[in-house]
Length: 223
Image (cartoon, rainbow, N blue to C red; front, side):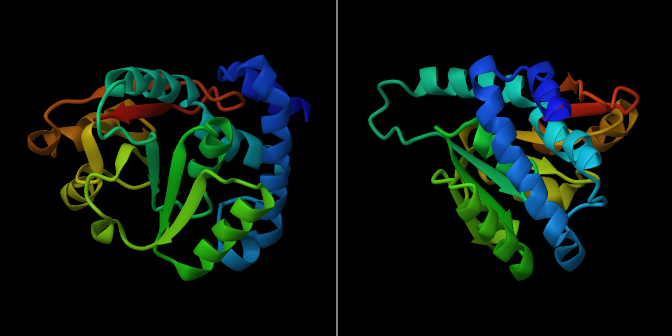
């Protein structure tokens, strides 16, 4: 597990979390590799590519998400209607980034939203195998999910943030919540966000460093 453990350390995972998290991720990787051909979950079944391109890519946002959760928790202290913190992974597919993040943040409630029934079956299996009591799988389309459900809405997909999709995602944020979209090149982000600036009211970009993908530009767009 050297590649995985070293990568987890590089993205900022605390030392005491690394070994148990790496063990869960190895189980998850095995599930993906075994089911990939049937469910079309990722573009590779190679172990090391799954580690770098999917597990570590998902967890590269660990520190900014951790920092927001701490700020959110502090802001909600004393609120009469305070619930536990929630993250919604929209269009979860094979569970990326939702499952790696849920394993890294066991104190946070996650909802993996996926419209395809067969992929939901895979997600349910992973939740069971990994014993993730903080995760539920919701078979639904984003537009039918209850508005204002999540403190953080995550979205990791290789398609633009166009107007229709952005409206769907933004309506799922709780008051004071954020959309955290995994994106690639900054030039593409700038072009996409210019087209929806009237919807977002501003955004910021956090550069992500993915171990093993130093030549690939990765960013997290926070709205």
